[in-house]
Image (cartoon, rainbow, N blue to C red):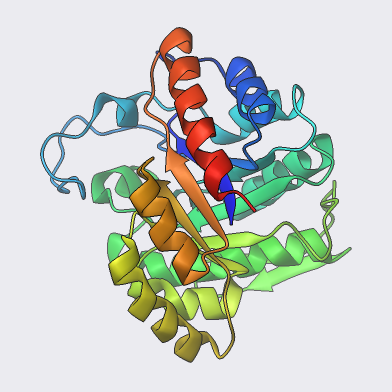
Amino acid sequence: MRIGVSTFVTDQGIGPAALGRALEERGFDSLFIAEHSHIPVERRSPYPGGGELPEIYYRTLDPFVTLSVIAGVTTRLLLGTGVALVAQRDPIITAQEVASLDVVSGGRAVFGVGVGWNREEMENHGTDPSTRGRLVDERLEAIVQLWTKEKAEYHGEFVNFDPVYQWPKPVQRPHPPVYVGGGEAAFPRIAAHGDAWLANSVPPDGLAPQIERLRQVAGRDVPVTVYAVPDTAEALEGYRRLGVDRVLLYLPTKPEGETLAHLDTMAALAERFRS
């Protein structure tokens, strides 16, 4: 079982370069970071975690700028979005950003994607929350066309462009892996567009039946990465028994000194379960 880290990188926590070096030095295989472009002052969408929306949601750094900085100070660490909010992103710009990250990192980009939950946030980007699923599906298809075709074009309900050139192309072939986040409603999207399921904090006892349902929907075994896992031996043992491909231990967003101390503790635990 591979073990990485998931976190929010903000202007109040450890900086990207220091974080990347610390993760690679401690043997973690990957980093997946969250994205929010902004948070509207007037909010109606309830926070999925319950209670008040944590301050880190208001202060996230741009994920591709952040991961590019980390790419420059690491050589092995996989660099993932967890998740890029595709319902709020122009597909042509996003395709170029992911491909550029893959190039500057030497083929280490992982495109973790989701539809998002904050309706007010996506509305500010011109997205109708009621059709965001179909919109995301089209944008993912268009992004893959831009990555893999010399002359890419796409004609759909929401995305439409005639043949275009776009470089750079990704280093990874056929393209960087697409990790699809979400619950069971996302299983058809995983079947159609995903290289892996990015399961968000699903405990081991609830994950096993979901993995079986995903196999039925996809018609194949789909690798599973679990996002925001608590750093306990009990949780890691449960995921290892299920044959999960990767867990992403959740790292709270803290200043550098506190973060490094926490990572030391997490690394000692990870060493017991890493394969």
